[in-house]
Image 1 (cartoon, rainbow, N blue to C red):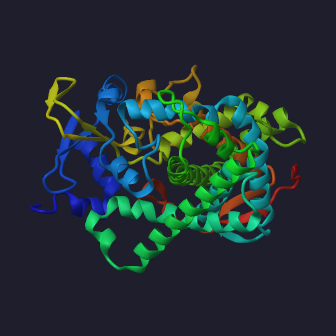
Image 2: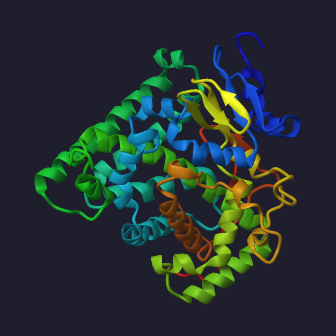
Image 3: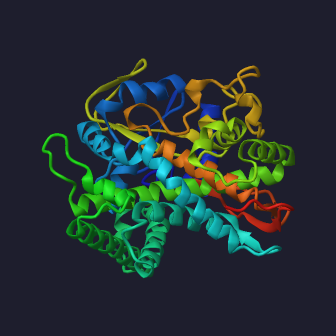
Length: 438
């Protein structure tokens, strides 16, 4: 429509609209997200891989990430080209295997504290509970030894406001940010408070000269490979803010869908529990166990396929670019939808069925080029191992302590905001007969 482009069908049902493009059109289809711009939805798995891998270094990140950069600051998530490569090398030590191993005890303690707060028979909003848990796990791994409890609680509340607000700001037109609305004031105040807290923590840690063993200490030790200079407090703050928004929202959504599917499929849940019992016995999960739970990993892969949190990932051409047989002019917005890609019946057998065994090689494996849980190429998620460790640690702790069952029979619908998440997911807490405690 003139001036509106495809805004109406996107606002009415963005997931349904994007999925309909796969059914009705070919490898590339042009839509209009904003007046005066062209956005090409890339639908073919090979072309998506070419965009992410072959063309990745020569493309800008596009509007979605550009907007995140404006809101949260320049970070490894939003940077492109040589800037991204430099930032990724700076931050890579914080996500190394040895560092992630140190985080597992912190993660498990936060999950245990969350589960301990639930009462038998209590009905909880699962996504809200998982958002809180994800925020706690992230904040504790980043600031485990750098903040006192009062400051930590205040930071967690401010991060929650920023995380909930950034999705809306990305989707709304830029001019709405200037409106004197309570929503805008809360977001701006919380973002400023988070930055002030992190910058104070950086200054205090620098002054003390201590290594507190958390991610903040690692970021303080990071050096620019070209200049040899450390990250500034502002740069560290931008990295942590973006990590909090990008990592917490996605982890919370995936955990919510995991608990939902385990509740719906008692046979899958039983197999997960049997594997945990065989591998762990009566002890809590540790980092060494993460790679020895193949069935739980298949369950997670199936959730990442069926309920992927990414609904519109963008890139932008900087110069005239060849993608397959098409020549795209400079300034063309490109996008792909992992949620729709992973549900395409031409790529995945019976795609709407939850079937962890589809990932067994002896069965009918899904095409690897169409499964992109963490993206691909030089911009593949830097926190993929961190996220998988969080998911395995959380599920292995939750399901052996309590059982969550749907509070009603209504089907749970996905809704796409900053990520694809359950619209409403209320579940009742039931105790396990034999709870395993750390």
